[in-house]
Image (cartoon, rainbow, N blue to C red; front, top):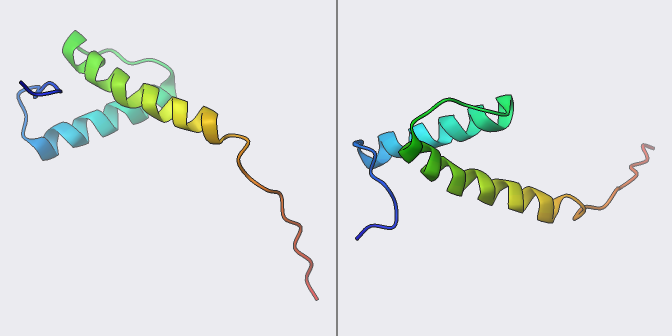
Length: 67
């Protein structure tokens, strides 16, 4: 049994659909979609949010001086 829903699409179409839906969700804050799609989108969106929270303080400020 697959670990994901096929959503009636080919793999490239499914990836594009999920990518676009996640982008719309993060940009607008909410989207209207089917329950099956929402469950797949949730997996990706939560992973991105967790990565962003983990990396938000992982940078150094560098001051560049020009001669």
